Image (cartoon, rainbow, N blue to C red; front, side, top):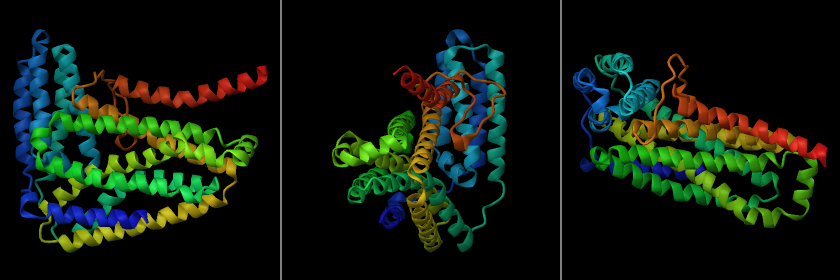
Length: 393
């Protein structure tokens, strides 16, 4: 069963990262933030649009070599996930502006916004974290719940789909996808913890590219599911094409969606547990207990969702499943764009005043808003086109 395999995977992670070679020193977030502020102030003060690449290089170094390389990014992701995501977006904005050669006043304004949030992050390190069994257990459980819920929803929706399609014997494809993702996540996470400084921008590029690929697969799967929501089409499809349709590209897409959904979360989960072990080195038992608790909760939700899905009318089931999968794809799309912008591989055009919703992958950049907005409009355009075509025919 998936939750049991996930538990075994995370226990293996703890065994590897708990060894002396995997140990990590506690992060001095205040010192890291101070270094970023000092060097950033100097870089922005010396900024000249005519020599913009030098400033962009320094700002990029502050993110990858200092914020990420010191381990503060991952550690902050445990203390305050929303603040970590916000800083990631802001780093992408200032780096993108420097590369574009914007006016000095605009870069200064964005940098001050970033520095203010860095000060908030530094303040979190001013008060020592409560180090005890219960705090370690709760943090451990929250990491797995937060990182695993999206993957669980995707796998749960696709499992219910196969069962509704009379292809319960094909569910193994989803489990196979998860089985491939787990060791890949472990290897990727281990590589990142072993060489996080050397990884630099390449790590963000890998994460961003994985998210975009996962989004593309989820979009494809959601459109395919939505096409089965009409009773007439469903009955015709179920009558003579279950074996052939599910055995071709659609089956590969379903397994790929499960694999990418788990892999996208898995490597980052390894990093978070690595940081948690560093700050709660004497409470490994509590961390394992937290993993067990979270795995049990995710398994319970997984079972409840699957049973509920089997009782829904088929049209409602396919529509809800398609919307759920599509929504998660939208989140992956936004988060992938943010990662590539932070890596300097994608331009950043800030949208001052635009709301930032990190858990939805929404950032204040023209590129992200345009991509997500376009994908929100696409289903409506496809539906309108289909209705028009039916009327004509």
